[in-house]
Length: 463
Image (tube, rainbow, N blue to C red; front, side, top):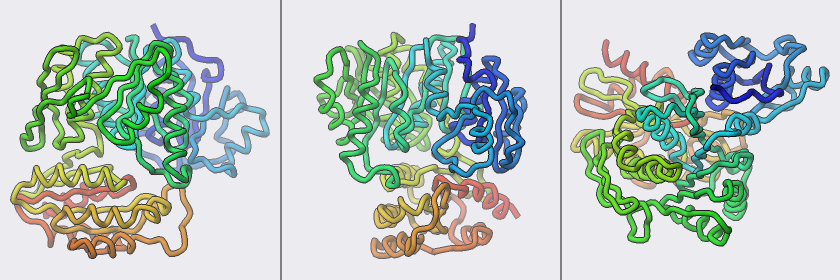
């Protein structure tokens, strides 16, 4: 039986309904019986999936798209104040609800697991969602990417567990009150919203403070995450579970054995050892799986059963996702856009490539991130045999004078990388063809629309 729909969410209108976070909430509400509508800048497969659930999706933003009887207008931090639908909501007196508040209302009455951290949220949330579903527990989930199995980013389930990706970028994760929270890592990112690590820690501490009484904080083996655990250790009634390879870990990773595009992982938890397959290469994905195992155990799921269920996870869109193969060249897609993520995925692919070449097509994401971390991005690209660097994908930001992808190119060359700046995306498939041969790996990398190049590269190689 579906939980009751809050009155404000009975007839919601989503501005930017095609986004990963917004569409997931809209899907769950539609599956629970709400009359959902919304708009997006362009049509997409996501819009079609929403229509299949009975959602009204308008293309383009216009005041007339907002129905007079809408119960609320749902927005994300990316929606600008001059949006015509937002202005119309003000005229009609329709309440405006932030995406995070809408998601928080969906978790009411359920055993919520919120997955946070600068990196790895989508993968870890997905691992839990797939494993719990495999065990027949029928969880609800909201994820910032599409699962390779069910092929969706959100689902309303009849089970008692709700797994949600908790986004720290705009502090909105502070709205949730989970039974179990995972914090995989804590680093400085989202420079438009955070000026220092002190601000980052304060934000994560506020998130941890919302964990329900008697709940658990699962902490990854990362210096920032361990520092967070130290800062909240005195909170009465809060259980803390450390995950990692170090001896002081409560969920200790004993072994990670690479096997091509997979790994065999052994984790010691609650006095027993559990060995299972992680269907994505790289040490960081093994750590994500161990965190998922620890979190699931803290909501009462048998660790032995959960470990084997984690084997059912086959990936999530844009997280080292194999897009195809042509003329012996495999094309893989990565969402990595922060230097730490880039390094982790490049090291994983370096190991999978063996003696073959690794060619990267990288698209920087956000002017502010490039301004602060461009040098580190360039240094990460030195792990590849050759790289193509595209122009910055602006997303929600306006340009910053003097900040271009040339900052990354210069840093990459100083680090000894073979890097080619390309300003015309349409030229990339032909350029990549000249760089990669049979047996090589091509990695499209970034949080923008660089993902569109994977199919184009494959198509070009096939001719």
